[in-house]
Length: 149
Image (cartoon, rainbow, N blue to C red; front, side, top):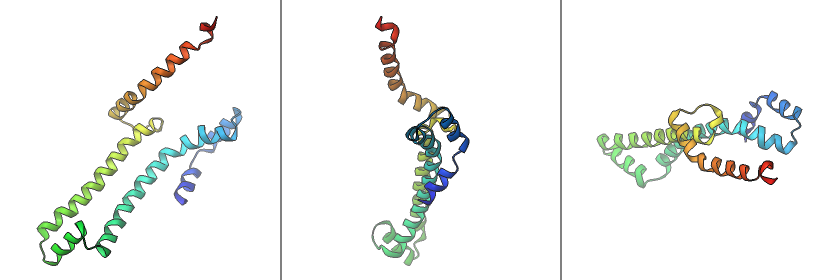
């Protein structure tokens, strides 16, 4: 809740004022200004919180669970078989890093207006949205007022 309120407060008030000046209703303010304005930052906040969740998960498993990877780490650490412990620790770190990088890559697809996307992300986003844009453009051409004469 605190993250959402902090992120919402970061929204530029000038955007809200401009939308209100143009006659936006409260529902339009939320759907067309507030949500598109806060979702990219909220997504980044959730990525950071996921990193914290990984950290607390590893700590909780090391303290409480004695099966799976944690049990293996605990057993091998007790017998000082560190050559078997460090690869598992590195694997956990790599998994967290790859997850974060994947979510960062998805940011450009989900929020192309945020401006943090590279050429590959733009290409994937345009490939994903192209069919939808084509269908909408075709529907607009069919229902254009000039066609109704």
